[in-house]
Image (cartoon, rainbow, N blue to C red; front, side, top):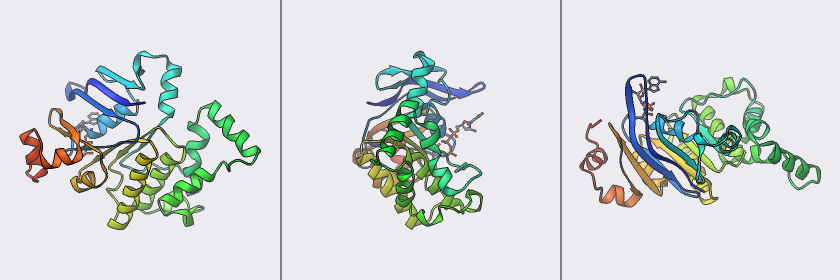
Length: 255
Ligand SMILES: Nc1ncnc2c1ncn2[C@@H]1O[C@H](COP(=O)(O)OP(=O)(O)OP(=O)(O)O)[C@@H](O)[C@H]1O
């Protein structure tokens, strides 16, 4: 089951930011979206997260044209997608409650019922996914700390754990390591790779080309007028088809 934009156009007011953008996020693959600031990486992630319909083109989730499907079907698709924003935007509650949020609110009723039955018969602990996700990002000792007192980097890690906790089909990450030091960047990068290896489709917007190189299966290069090139990571870095990709990789100041 793939999440994808097909020939999408989008923008704000009179301005068009993305034009004819087609990007597929297949299950189990990490797709890095790289490009300079302001080119529309966040806009593309928001479209993939089904926050708003594109002006033109379509969003497909496992073959369903999401914005032409019923509101119920759209909601089901949206519940299977986790998004981590550039600003961590945590709730006014403890780390534990933040990490559990997805389990309580975003699961469908059927999922929640199944889970509650499983809990009752002792097959699993309802909070174990949240705990596991917090362990994944190394924050299991901060459970009862209030989210408001976390450092920027810790908040970013809790936001990541919150999205991971409910086992989404797709994980959309907007610069998830921008506030992190190298050690914690490695923690998140490992978690992203693990998510991919577990079958989750991941799209990650990043300015960091080395990060894309380390963790991505595919790279989409997005410059002034939308995606100019998508391909396997090694190919994009070693043999790009577009001159502007080469310039961007070489660190030239293009936009
Ligand atoms: N809600 C909005 N209303 C008007 N313009 C917007 C809105 N959101 C984004 N933009 C504009 O759209 C363009 C693309 O923004 P976007 O956040 O998608 O870029 P980005 O590639 O993610 O940038 P960065 O790397 O700096 O996060 C920018 O010029 C931005 O100012």
